[in-house]
Length: 638
View (tube, one colour):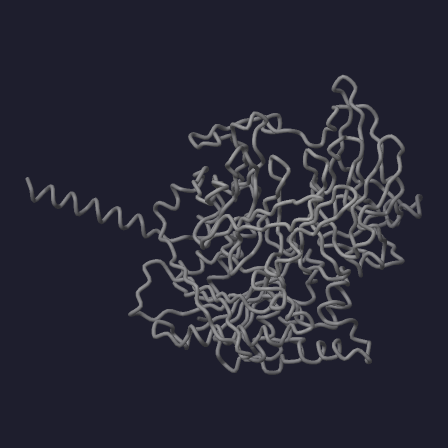
């Protein structure tokens, strides 16, 4: 009897261990619930959130909404989530509602100009910005509309931007955070870049505009600032906060949190070199603001006081610490803040944060059952000395059940941006857990150009795309590959956007370090990029200007030394290329040129064109194909 019991116990342990070692697969990744917080209920008792789950068979993503007590407990699915939240698009007095609507302003379609030729398929432009992100300009612009409410029923909407060829929300990713009511309900404040055509394409100068309900007059509130002004919000006392960058044309300038009482403007984060504010919310009492920002390879939660006219300095305090990302702030109720949190092993879930102590309690458990049977990947911080003697953080992600006595192939992961933070993110495409679970050690450097390590480090990549950052990459992979558990003969290099550019660049200068490359939507040729991309402020700032400006030394250096096409004769390694056909930021021709160059030199290569994708891969079936082709290529070449 004891022997039977022992055998049963052993089998239970074995079964449990086996379950715990299930590895992440592309299908499992695309079955995870994607959690996003919507807000705190009107009574302050519940957190309202959405869970989106891809339906691969139908090639769509389905979303359901839930509530859960702020103190934790069972979640309840609800059909009317919006009714549980304060509708901040209704004016404080309940008389008006604001929204956004696409309005026809310009005639650019052939049939607009030639009404008798209705079957024509023609677009006619006389200025730049003829296409943006993933759509051709069609003469329509997003405008803020004010609709009177009479006994709760809508009347005739008024376009407060009538006749203007400008957008609100800002394209391509702006939403209803771009337009808000002032706290007294007398004005609508909205963000817009009021430039058209070529002027729009070369500038990042968005401003905040206040439309007065009574007079119909619109006033520019931020005319003195020449960079981005975004996401206005008001506290109950009437003070307005927003996000601001100073320099026109520089999309990755330090992003600060600014507040004004209508007379005095204070930059609350100017004194902190490390702080690049990602998002924020006012505290309930309006005396401080919570924000998240990158710091040392993670996104953390901070608080900053608003001193008003007291003359005291703003005080910034870090609330959370750890190897995870606080990637969103849902809202506050009393001494608790609800946030979204992720790490390399876990997709975002909602957490309660004790504001005083920073202690955290997981609130939603959408994917817990999956992770309970999933092999987790060990992650560690590693610090590598750069060629100029600086200390660079490198994330290293190990396969589940990592055995240091074995040898593993390694992948150098190149982050996009170029000036985006490499933190404890959880991607549904560039998923480091999935990569490691396929038996690879992942090397992810916080190279030049990433916020969270000081402004100087962040800005050193501008006009130096192929310089120190490439040396940072090579230092990182060389350092890790010196470990006895890394197979130096099986190193790969992968990345998208600037990461894809990095792959193309390293392919010509790696001196046979790598055995395979994978690039997604990367820049291959600076000249053709300058001639086909849509937002010209990016190459103007990052390359130094146009290729024809022979008197511009910085630009000439960029086109000569940092364009991967100039080094393609040194390519000698298999390369897989993904590219979205509807990517107008980094147009398809970049991937086509790289593929042609590889093919005509007899290099093993493959081009995968995502016909209906832009700079991202958003459709479930496309995403599954992307993952399978990614790992099939690695299996073939590494």
